[in-house]
Image (tube, rainbow, N blue to C red; front, side):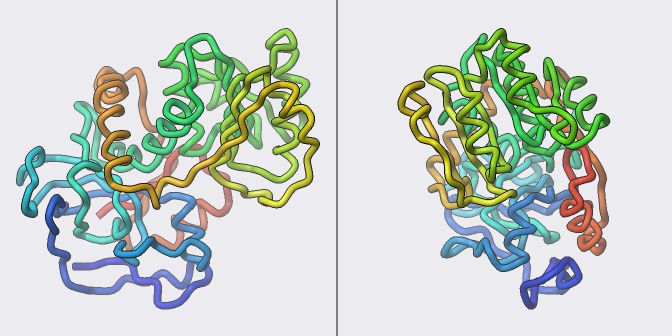
Length: 325
C-alpha cells in the first residue's frame, strides 16, 4: 500500500509517499480501505516531533478516516466486510489501508460523502467528550468556543446548538466570524479588533460563559477566568499560544470554577467506544437529517499532504482539511 512516511521530524516537506505492507486487523479490529483521511492539528505536532504515538500505535500520521471494511479480526461483531465506516484511528490514517478498533468505527451517516465522513471522528469525538462528558454542557447555558472557525470549533458550535446552548465564538477575521454565525453562533467576536470578555459580558447581561472550550491558552487562560460565570467550567484542549501562564486564582475560588482539560489519543479503547456510542445515538441522526454538517475547507490528494499541512499551519482555512485517496 501507499502511505505517508515521516523519515525525520521537521517541516511539511519531510512528509513523503512510501510503500509498505498492508496491516492485518488484530482481535477486535477491522481493516479499512481508506477513501479519505482527516488532517488535524495533532498531526502537525507529531510531524514536528512533539506528540509521539502511544505504545503500540501506528507511527504513521492520521487519526481519522472514512472508507470500506475489507476484512475483520477475531471477535468483531458489529462491523462486516463491505460496510462503509468512518473511524477514529490510533494512528495510520494517512495510508491506503488502516486497522482500527471496532468500537471506534461508526457508519457513514446517510447522505454524507466519504470526504465529509472522514472529517467527523477526531473532531466530533473530541467535542463530545469535552463539552458533554467533561464540561456537562446543558440546555440554556452559555458556551464560548475559541477558534470557532476551526474543525473543532465548527463542530462544537453545531453540537452545542443541538443541545440548546447559547453559543459564542472567537475567530481571527470577519469572514471567519460570519461562518461561525451561519453555523449557529449567536455572536462571533473578531479577536483582532474586539475584546471577547467585554462583548460576551454585554451580550449575556453580565452573566458570562458557563462553559469555555479553549485551544489557545496563553493570556486567554486569565481572560477565560475573568469571563466565566459562577460554577463555570473551562476546558483546555490545546495551548497554541503557550501552556505556561501566571493567573490570579482567587476568582477560581470565589466563582467555584472548574479548570480542566484532556487529550483524546491516550484514552483507552473502552472510553473511545463509549464516546462513539453516544455519538451514534445522539449526533448521527442529526447528521443524517442535515441539522449538523461538517464544514470542509479543502481537499488534497494523498501525495499533496505537505500542502495540506501548510494550509493547516497557516490557520487561514474555515472548517476541515481532508486527504483523498
